Length: 465
Image (tube, rainbow, N blue to C red; front, top):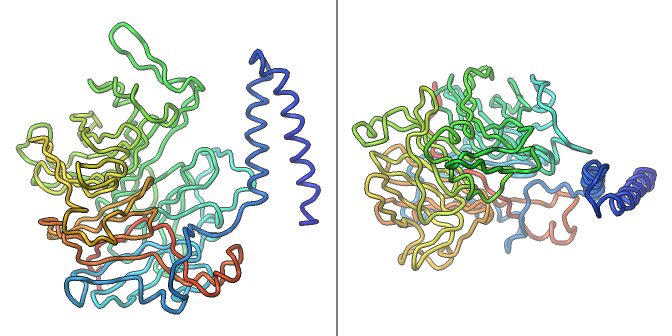
């Protein structure tokens, strides 16, 4: 700590000066009020970072010892084997038994629940491969290894991974997107405001949530009035970025712009965060079963807009918003096309009369009917109260009969049968954390750790596999 003393004293003096200047300017909010306010925020972030712990996405200690953790990761409840191989997301310090102390980016498990391939996590090499330079960040004392977390992992047909990162305590929070080889080494990386979960439509068409930084409030025309949103004038304007397999940006849909041009624009008044008005968190592509359904067509995109508690269907050709759907779900994630007019989503904060919050919800946009698939009356008690206030993901099996539902904040995922919500398998983000120096020494040596979990996806065999 002694070598940090000059920096600590500098930060302390900066905070004191900012507070005194703010006291004088803040009464009337006159110049230099805005600059002082920004200075106070920056100083606070720096002060927080000086005391920042390096724990990855550690959530809590488990009740089992480190040696028992690998056997707790996958549990089948309706047979001795998994119906499909899966890609189990990881991150910093996770799966240390398979990849060493730095952890695995992801691990493929076979139907026998044994690891088939582990992707080493090499955050410093990934960040060093950045090919962009036009995306400015406010990121004091930022460390990609410590402060970026992989939230989205999809596998290319050759075994490479498409990975999206989010940052902790930067503005903006989007951490970028990259392509990683099976040995964990990057092929390319873009530190470009990408965020949340990407969709690999095919190996050369990657749909990635991103955003642009606004420079003025958003104005919504409602009748003869103009309602201003985000008076501070720095809104996050979500986009759907289309990349090719080499990481080149080939197209972009500006979602806020499309929403403002639609009949649904007034819903922006209902956002839960004026300066992050829609919060795009997932994109899916409608399949051929959508043909003939009013407002839907094969190839259309569906986008989950968390801060509006709604999802929209867009014409893939020009991004025109064709439908907006809301209901009893709130702050949802991972809206996915199931078949025909039915969609599945992870409903974070909603509930029906008996089950929830946090549930797997089926929505039929043709009839308006909503069905809580999981949890239900038959759900085992230990799984009936899973809750994730943030994040959450679903992945639908190729036969459209099952889904893996990820409760991110619990570090737990459940595979359920869609016909009746029966639990088939349970996945837990658990591992040995004895090597994580910033955790309590006694506990980390005697107890395994549970991490945030951002995804468990079904896998098809890679080409040549």
